[in-house]
Length: 234
Image (cartoon, rainbow, N blue to C red; front, side, top):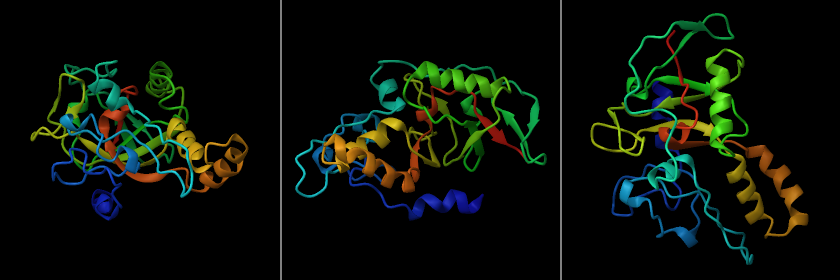
């Protein structure tokens, strides 16, 4: 667990990793193009900039910004599926697929603490539709699906703000460490690297599959559409 907690310190921050752009500590690690370097409209919330990618040298393609769930919550275009006043219930434990480890679904994100090893139902279509994400999450809660995505909590959750975003006692957005990618981000990176030409897209996409998931520090709120979170206990 100690190695997992310390791992983000060796990540290479993106050019936009500062987030607020006012000398705050660098927290965010996802890519951000130089075009959008100083154009993070979410910096007032100390949130990461939307993901974007620099085009190859000589390319005329214009990078686009890919919003994640936390950006939708902060702009009030929609709310996460978890609530600020979820009941603090103790749910029964389950046995992991290794038949040795115990894990338990949490009843509220306020129960999460730094270093917690957590899981959500594996969802390769994440961020395509909030309702699809919720359905996949619910299937895991009902024990209809037994494949999981793992991540580590990097700060204690003290509260959930008015936007539904978990925050620390100091008011910072709670973050997690994970290896992940989403289809919208994968496609945008492939589009940019293929110079915007469709006939280059298949080859670039195949090359990207070799590094399809990278280690990132991201907001816990990016999983607000998948509210059924499990914590490994033993």
